[in-house]
Length: 182
Length: 167
Image (cartoon, rainbow over all chains, first blue to last red; front, top):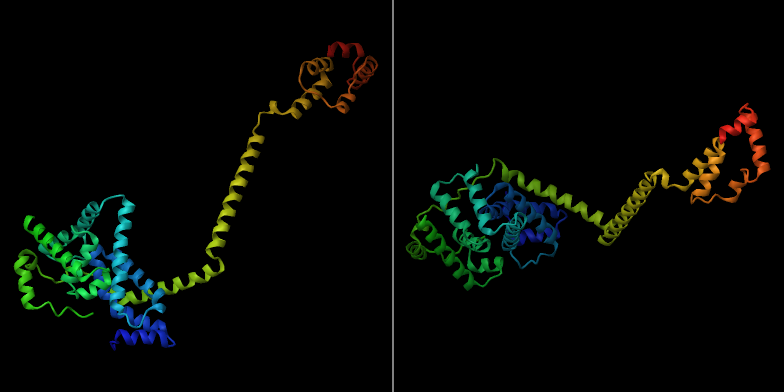
């Protein structure tokens, strides 16, 4: 399949007779990255599947106002991060439990997850990441796993590059300490 | 998405020295998805997009203000009907002896058999019969005499026996 640039896809969406087709190409291009970003934040596959669908539905509803000078991927990552964090907050409110307890529940879920194929040390890393607050978890994942530029992360998370750098190293230190201690 | 070109072997080395435990762990994705998940996801999203597109049509027909008004009217109607129903139930199950009409009927039917007791009971009760009802019943000796004769005839009794009977 031809890989269109974001600019071409935006052009196609706004000017072709079939915006559905253009949007479908956008979904196909970004679904994997967006899904994995969400999955690393919420861990569960079913929850991630629901959230990724919500993300693209929101994107569809807002796409007619999308500015041509923006990049689709930072915009989608921004929606995905907000959706995932708001999902965790809703879960917290629903259960009337603190993030510490959610982290414990997610950690238990990880133990029983049939779709986790990592070894014990990778499981330990995921549990260490769960110790971070959701937004810091997003910072760490985007930089460590996706190796995303701070400039793009700043657009996604609405923080300054300096703050993100400090946040990332603080997260890495917390994880390092957890791995050493456990 | 482009990866950060500033992440160089040198910067990686620095990071690895600073966080050796973390750096020793593989960055390979440890999660999996069910078979065919990414192949079917665009269709699932398309289906949901079409479903959400139908919603605005309903929203146009019934804007929020109309929906709120309808909900309010329905709630008030339900409460009103419930109130009427409960009131009706209350009336239906009201003890019969609290019903003046019932007492009147009872006393009037009693009169057919025990007129003397009827007068006593009316005199002692708080029930005030309407004039036209009482006018149908004997209120002087002549009328009472006629009444005794008529009823004695009706019951094929001797008037004296009938009188003894009602006394």
